[in-house]
Length: 272
Image (cartoon, rainbow, N blue to C red; front, top):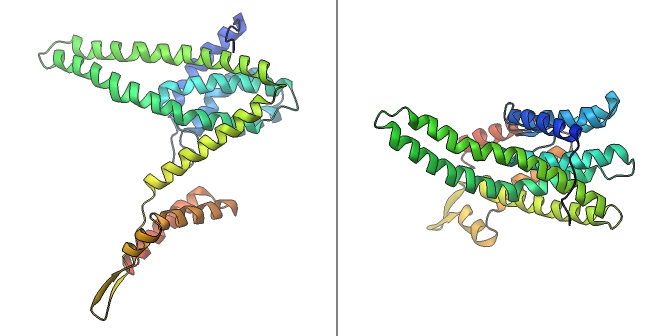
């Protein structure tokens, strides 16, 4: 698949605007949408350019308010792909707009794995080591060198990741619009996204029961038997309960307070 899509003067202006707006990604991080609001604001230069009416712009912004979380350094790459898809959506009424979020969700997991390893796990450690080794001797170049060594690769990846994402998305759409590849990729991305969310649920949701008793001199702990029959059954059941509440149009904030209340009540009565 060719990525040789020429950038016009207007494209380069849009890249600069998207690049600058990408720095607000985590300015409003929250439990409900995580980086969703920041991503939507980061998409505004493209949305403003592609859509002419207030209603179309509002619909596009609403689309990008969905939950999103990624290593910030690689977020512009996803912005580039989403920008190319928004361009197509603005030109073609029949374009599947749901595919935009599916592709975003599918990309954020793999790219976060790469970004966390490179930037948080490797580059940060190396550059801090270099900076601290100079700073501990009173050399003012320590912090300056750290900032330069860390942020030069960071800023290059941000800008050229954005350009690559846009050209990749443009090439993808132009070659796959009639072959159904977008639909297949959307489906594959949805599967990957659900797998990532499932893994996050299994690793991050903690719930155990403290119910126990003594029956005829035999100690009985319910959690031990549950772990033998169906490990992580309670976290799964609670996650499905939260999903059911969401399907009933309950607000995530209400789910958060419900979880706190259940946790406190469960501990007080000795169930959790």
